[in-house]
Length: 167
Image 1 (cartoon, rainbow, N blue to C red):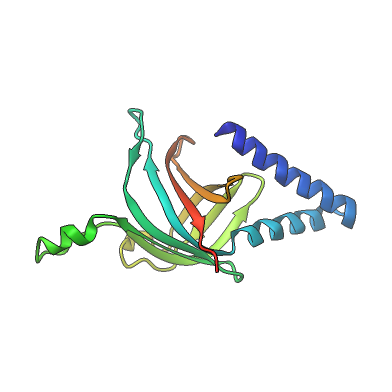
Image 2 (image 1 turned 90 degrees about the vertical axis):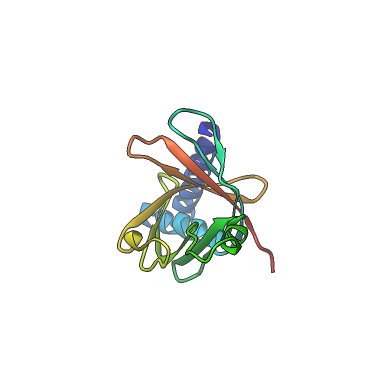
């Protein structure tokens, strides 16, 4: 992971340097680099995997399905649920919980490969409303978008891997 983050940082630095060379200003270069990252995000994605990394070690496949969307107006929405949620719900008349759904504006910190989802609404996680969901992003050579969650110590606690849904 460190190697891919370094690679992403090098790509961001190369975009920044190219923009400085062509536009002659660091501010313009930053703007160009940010626009390039935003363009890379725009689209609809399906969830390939959602893996958690417990503090005790190892990894856990959460067995989720989901969708995430980023638009040209710096807005996003995401939904995800355990694959077995419909089966569990069919076995009871009680409310069966699981998954996530939320939306809101997005900001980027390209120097840290960080995207922040500013949660405006969430019918499944009411406590998220008004909060920021910070994710560390990576675009893989295979065209996947990886969004990693880190704890307050910087340890990666989970990674959601998304594949763009083509038109």
